[in-house]
Length: 209
Length: 103
Image (cartoon, rainbow over all chains, first blue to last red):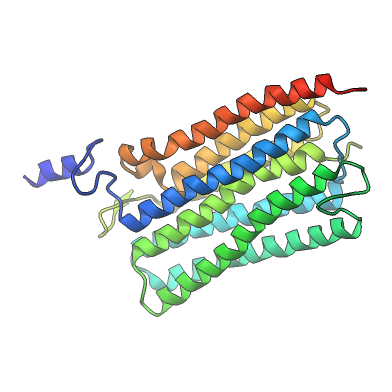
């Protein structure tokens, strides 16, 4: 009997009250991720269209500092995803102290990312890049750059706050494993979006030596 | 692999570290590619291909989708496929617009 129940639990179509075999909160986060990925892909498709269709698209990103810094930022996000996965694992093993430590490391990665990104924005703004104009004469460059990276940065900042709330709750013994796992899903999604923004926005606009 | 009290199949840290290393390697390849003087359409194709591999790695391992019920996977993936299909509609049109441009 127990064996049959176990087999049914992992069946491809379980049906019944829980066809996806995940909690409603987790399913909710997955649905949010799907809708958010549609938002980002709308922006990315729009950006890529104007990028290809424009022969005079500015390519202002120098190897040093922009591309190196953007690679370091990618490294920060990827590493924070690793520590987040380890936090979720620690949580499933019931080790609350390690969950808090790993989430703190994840937040550190996110904060470093935001600081480096803010520095880069400041540099571009100092060069005269605005949403509606820039020194290279293609206004869409600033518009698409700031919209895409800005929306992503907003996600990173809210992710850091979200993880802070979760870590605080876990240290006080409040949240369950599922809550930690769901915050992990959000954080990995933010990382995933950057995996598209980094090559499409930065690597397609490197200044050729 | 070990099974925890929650009943989830929990993966060891080795898989996570390996995934992280692969993601870094793919990123390094992308950065190197940027310095090859390739046409923008080809670059876009290559970069997007590598990014889709990276996204799949993140979703399968970090987001645990590989260990979820297939039912959930087939519910979530079509939206992503739609996004990629959307790109393949718009990119050729972007190239067309480039060719039409007044020089």
